[in-house]
Amino acid sequence: MKGENAEILIVDDRLENLRLLLNILEREGYVVRCVRSGEMALKVLENTTPDLILLDIQMPEMNGYQICEQLKSNPKTRAIPVIFISVIDETMDKIKAFRVGAVDYIKKPFQVQEVVVRVANQLTIRRLQQQLTYQNERLHAEIRDREAAQQQLQQLNQKLERSNQELEEFAYVVSHDLQAPLGTIASYAELLENRSEEHLDAKAKKYIGNIIGGSLRMQGLIQDLLEYSRLGRSRDKGFEMIDCNRVFALAISNLAQTIRQTQAVVTSEGNLPRVWGNSIRLVQLFQNLISNGIKYHQEGKPPVIRVSAVLQENDWVISVEDNGIGIDPKQQGRIFKIFQRLHTETEYPGSGIGLAICKKIVELHGGKIGLRSLPGEGTTFYFTLPNVNPSRNEKELQCKNHSD
Ligand code: ADP
Image (cartoon, rainbow, N blue to C red; front, side, top):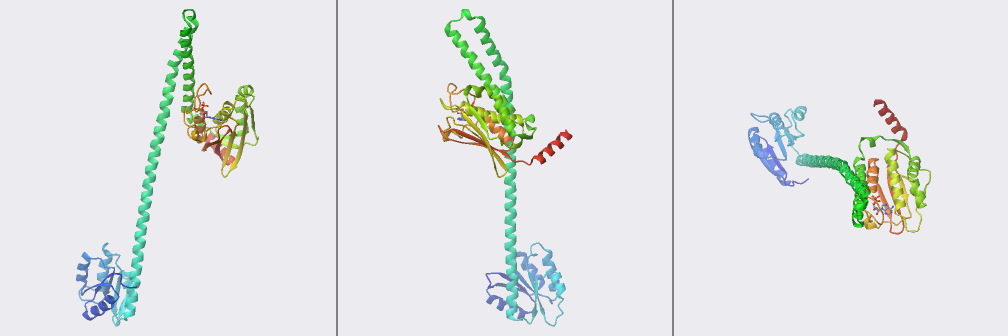
């Protein structure tokens, strides 16, 4: 290895040795500095940090071992490699040399090539060590940064969760408190309509009718909002293994009247999975999606709804497919948001909350909801539910019930 501007400090009390080493090493391209005593060496090292020190052992006042010990006890000079130089007839204690911290030794009279190779070796090791230290530091800094970012994200998430909870709490309180005054408005309007009929002209009756209609609609909206904000509270957390075939049957039975009236055909393949969930909420999920499929049917075409399930990796994907009016892809991003409707009340009555509830239920079960649809070509809503190990979860549930 050539010098690459590495700096070497030579400490030797004999001038001829210093000259010889200086010549050899400068020829190799190193920046060389020579001193003739341990004291001078320590002084020089207060202001510079060479890449390597060549240190004579036998020197008056302070010998090489003592100097080396001092260097190794000082954090500023500890990392500088030290090579001892010793005359052949001196009894060099190699064990002692390594114990005080030297990395190598060279015997005098030295062969030029040996000095060059030993110095180059130690400089290469030092350079690699420095690279390793630098890489380690960078890695640690990166880990620290990542941990800090993760912590920040966690804090943000917690904040978001808190404000979501507060918002839901607020929606709950407001909708709950609005119910009573709204009920009063509706019942007084009804009273006015019933008891004072003979004093009212047609216009007044129409206005009262509007008040009653508006109040009833608002009562419906508030009921839905209450339902939405209640979702996810403690009673929804009672999970058990549930047969989706039963969930489907219950949803169908709740919708029996609508199905009869619309002559809808609602089928399932009969092989729906068993999943880990809350049965009331899952019935509500199936029912909302099936009733939407019925409600948004095409004029003159009886609704046909098909419910099916496939296993994809670790999730069950359950689909509710209809032959209805379909949804414009540009509008599909909106429909899971609360109160977002694509139709007017007169076209299709509704509150725009059903799909928001579906999304919340699916997420409560650790799944995702989505859809595929084109206008005029029907819609397929699909949602995922984790495919869990039934025996494990039933055991967990039993343990929980015992501890309750
Ligand atoms: P609502 O039915 O009360 O309006 P939803 O949240 O259930 O509320 O649905 C939001 C909107 O998504 C609906 O207004 C409708 O435009 C559209 N939509 C939902 N389901 C279907 C469906 N199966 N086919 C076509 N459009 C649908």
